[in-house]
Image (cartoon, rainbow, N blue to C red):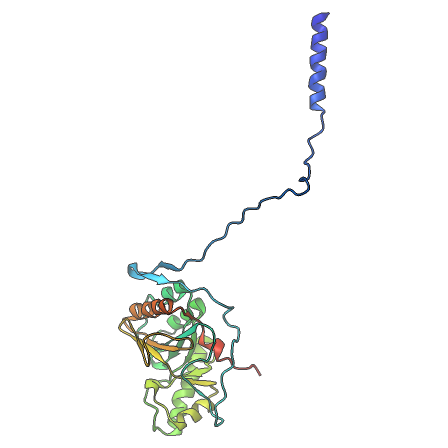
Length: 271
């Protein structure tokens, strides 16, 4: 009988434990604090590039594609000539001309650096491989603008000749990219009043010059020894594209500037 009593008691203990209610989580005591760990990722300042290079990376200071400033109005009713951008922000602008050399690293460099250049292109170069420049627009955010059809010196040429070179180039680029250029740069930086009249009649909002240039991997200044905010920098599609583009990026880092899209600061009001 004693053994039976012990067994019954043990069984009751098991049932009691099994039927016990689940423990209820208690709210924190008044004044107690809880700690939440948040993991953040710091954006890279440089990434590996083509041929073992290191590519500086720039973060967008605002949402690209949003107007930051309007194109100025020409004093004589014609499009204005813009040599630099008036800004109180540490912004600089990179423009790339012609399109003669379609360097295979161009797309990678633009995407890796997070920089969106403005391209001033000639019909005679683009028509050799339109898909190359369309990819720079669609995959790297570069904007395509006009630089004449055949890259002639426009200065002193008749109106009809200049209009054909300028408007014809814009028409061609629009057909290839799906976007009509809004900015124009004359070949060699040479222009006259007829050039401005023709470019205005072709619908452009500004004739764009430059304040610094990159050649053979060296940034060259028209004045001073550094890049300044608002500078418009010129380079070309050449065999030295990698050296030139990297020289520009490194100079921006050195001078504390961020490359941003030129179009955002020469925006055209929508009709």
